[in-house]
Image 1: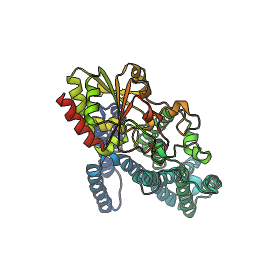
Image 2: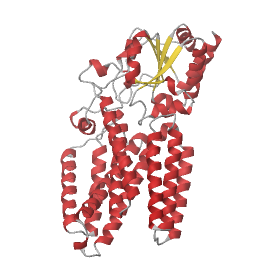
Image 3: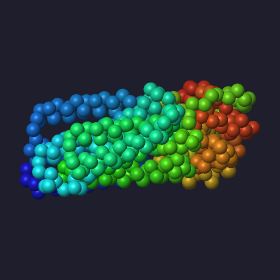
Image 4: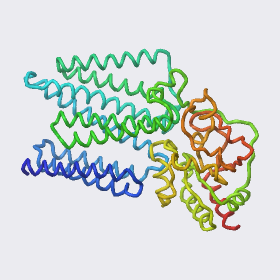
Length: 461
């Protein structure tokens, strides 16, 4: 294959990546976007084999085969509630791959005349090693938090700020030395210090802040891949990495704005008690509860209903039954929409993906900014597995860890129904005063089981 043909194929693959990112901007086109992106990645891989002068082809093909099997099996078996963990794992592997490639290139650099190596190439090498290592170790910590392997609370210990600051200084110093005097052992040490920075960066983060950190680390991986593309002289890697880095950065900023807090506060707020902590205790204050039949009557006589989905819906896998309930209410002439908070669930877009899986019409999914003004005219708000995203403490309690976070205005509706397993607080670890409001009714039990009973009760009316 000629170089011209290879570059044209790389250009086609880059266009596929751009179109894929465009497709992912809407649930309607997300599936096609994924397919286009996968096609671009496949084209790029084939082009490398046809154009590149490769060694150890059998080992490479074997590694690709193993990775394909692992990826396919993981994607088919993963539960919707575990999707954020899978994203964290895949993202971490990408960062690690970029760091390892940079180290291998560094090994080649030290064997040539350093005068012939551009300074910026050495800077890009150090950058890729550090950012790739930070992304890998940070992603592994987010995986452990989401999987319950370690506490979701911020992990703090005496001297953590000093250790983190020292690690950052060490990264900068080692990077400067590596650029001035490239040595493989310096690169390895730099990678180890980068791994330490990643762990120390994510450990203090807890609760509802974890999805934002996943997005940030995704941006880190994109930047490391882009820098790796510069080192290798591969335009496709440079474009693809830049797209991921830019998209991840923008998403991180948007999510931080949705939380009403700065990124600095999200990452380091726990050091002064300002992070979403998680892990609070259940309350023993009295609340008003009801049976599925009582709630069915409440819904059946409403003219306007808004559903607020949350992580509990994903845990119970009740999205299909919920969609059927909404369909039945619609047949009775009741107007129903879903209110989607930007950080509902455990990752960006978690609720959108969950409801799309249940074939919920995209038109029924309303973003917070579009639906908040409608709660005052709503007869019943049905909260399924959500808590913090409707907690009035975000508006009324300055000392609360979620204070300042924009929330769905469910408290302004005429009636509120909470579907919960127990009175245990949400991920922020604080009580929701809306649960104790006289207009609030609680329906205790597993969301899927209660949703099924509620559906049967509504059908019988």
